[in-house]
Length: 223
Length: 158
Image (tube, each protein chain N blue to C red):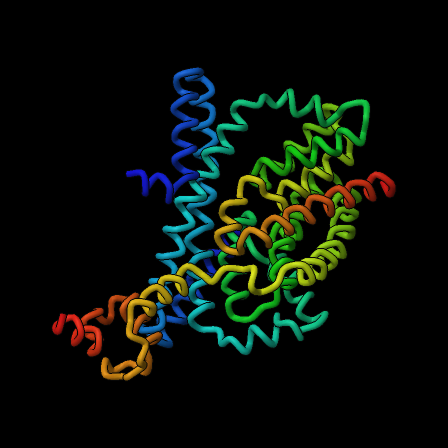
């Protein structure tokens, strides 16, 4: 129970806060619930396609394409490409995290990841139209013209400050590495996979079972 | 509208993938499922907290602090409110217009709109999960100052 609460700290805190609100002020509680409805609807529309797209990218797009387009040596072209990705995307910034992380894992530079995220947040083609209609073209134009150069500077500064070691490996890689750690790592290939890492991937995908590792099952029988 | 485009892209990409290789498509669906579950739980938590925050803080208070006599203070308030909340953009723009008509400073609105989308106090735990603490702190901090810079220049130009 404690472990579950620890793992889902955020949602536990939220549940507690709602419980307190319900007791203190049922009216506020109802207002908050109504607000939740709007948010959840937006999330339900945007999140599934985002997840499908980012996982399809990770399966299909070869790493060298990403490195060439968005890597450390991609130059100004990489920066413009990053802004375009953000500009034509949909959804709030938290929808951008999985996509940006997928590109990063495939070799995009820290600076370009920051540019993608910032452009994802601010530089939006459809939102620009909404902004001009509500706040006027001069307001929207000035804001966009000022923001775009700042985003590129931001990417440059972040590239200098944050190193690749500072960013964690993805959840999937972490889970695969955990499985690899349990293996003898002799890379004998007796299981039918080329090395222990490939075998761990298969175990994670439920295509192979741990006891298919010959060395592991052998030593457990002896014990 | 953007959501429709997004869904169309996802469906086309998915069908193309299915046509090219069923095995790779299956693999990608497994990744998507994992991403979905781990992210959705956290996002629901974040959205629930923000909704509660918005329900507790009355809009009148936001109007008052963003249209104060001291413009610098208003800008600071605008960027702070933008930082702690996430409001869908299609609500944020009409709200900004209302705030401006109610007397909020133009620069404060600009700061509010930029931090609203770029700086995320509420999305901090999600960003940290993906990119680590150092990246998240620096990106949000720098973006916050970038938003204030944009606001100041807008005040000068307009």
